[in-house]
Image (cartoon, helix red, strand yellow):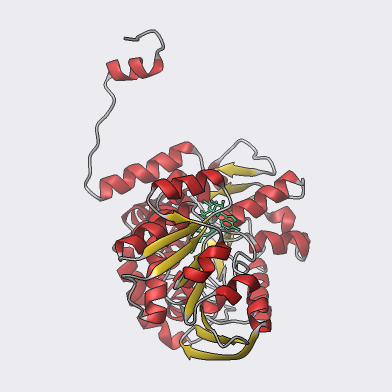
Amino acid sequence: MDYDIQNIELALEGNLRIEWADQYMPVLRLIRERFAVEKPLQGVKIAACLHVTTETANLMRTFIAGGAEIALCASNPLSTQDDVAASLVKDCDMPVFAIKGEDTDTYYKHINSVLDIHPMITMDDGADLVSMLHSERTELLDDVTAGTEETTTGVIRLKSMAAEGVLKYPIIAINDAKSKHFFDNYYGTGQSTMDGIIRATNRLIAGTTIVIAGYGWCGKGVAMRARGLGAHIIVTEVDPLKALQAVMDGYRVMPMSEAARIGDVFITLTGDIHVLRKEHFEAMKDGAIICNSGHFNVEINIDALEEISVKTRRVRTYVDEYTLKNGIRINLLGEGRLINLASAEGHPASVMDMSFANQALSAEYIVKNSTPLEKKVYDVPEEIDATVARLKLQALGIEIDELTDEQKQYLESWTIGT
Ligand SMILES: NC(=O)c1ccc[n+]([C@@H]2O[C@H](COP(=O)([O-])OP(=O)(O)OC[C@H]3O[C@@H](n4cnc5c(N)ncnc54)[C@H](O)[C@@H]3O)[C@@H](O)[C@H]2O)c1
């Protein structure tokens, strides 16, 4: 079996951590147990490009239990946990192509390697697989039935492909399931982004001024957690509604040009490009910390930072200090890549349980669904979304009320008034 990982000797450590995560993934476990009996994915080839974490490993185990043949590469050069990659190869006999810190050439070589299995389903986090298939590996497109996409940025890219009429097969937008983004983007990114910043810097958050760029699902989650740790929050936005929401949630809102002068820590979560750039760096205080938790490493203009710097040195793991011509030092975390995965372990298992339950059930849906799907981006079927939430509540031992017949009738009617 072909694979490319850091060190197979790390498998035992990885296996223990995968087992640890599994205890917090009851919904996925339930699906895995059913898949092991029913084998809904027997012989189905899946190419997966996901962050190689303990939670992803449990998703891979679920697909293998369902009979799939699957190959995995990383969806970000810094998001691989090398011990997990080792365990997947050794304990699951699975081809994995992912090394933490791989350079850009290796990253794309690894994407090509998973595509070499001639997938029937693609599973993306950021749409890099789809992009490679549509540009350099078009000979494989005929084999692909459908794909899934995990994150906001990937869904945006795919919708733009569909709008231009260039998307060659249907995609299910896992991100857009309520049981995904209400929880993963909000609670998951909220906790793990702060976790990444704290592990990278060991800085006290209480009393710190944190600037959060983007008040979407992820930005709201990070703002909530940072406030809980005692930070003063400033939000920057381009959408008037989101900005207003931030104001009414009790945060200060201002343009980045003003926030740049005040902030101690800056976090970008916009899915946009060059949100932090030259004029902002030049206005920052000495010792400012900048990082990104949006999907791609383009939110901070690192080239511009390099251009105005006279000295760069690595002062801690994944902390690069840039000294500007004016003597100001700016600390860039995680090379501008997702800080929660570069310096921490990504989202906690309990929240990935729901995101990956959607992935597993959507893959089964692609295989079993009899109505042909068009070449566009689909929502996760509502019954899957509801099932994931119901199973999670069940696992947590929480019961909820049911509508009475009278209530159902009332909610459906327009005749009963005052
Ligand atoms: N770190 C993680 O593990 C993780 C998890 C989920 C999603 N993501 C990624 O995080 C990013 C945000 O995802 P989301 O679900 O919150 O998206 P979202 O669409 O809900 O929010 C993005 C927000 O950024 C704002 N924005 C855009 N350009 C801006 C600018 N120049 N300045 C300030 N604000 C701006 C938008 O108006 C919007 O409110 C995406 O790239 C997504 O793929 C990361």
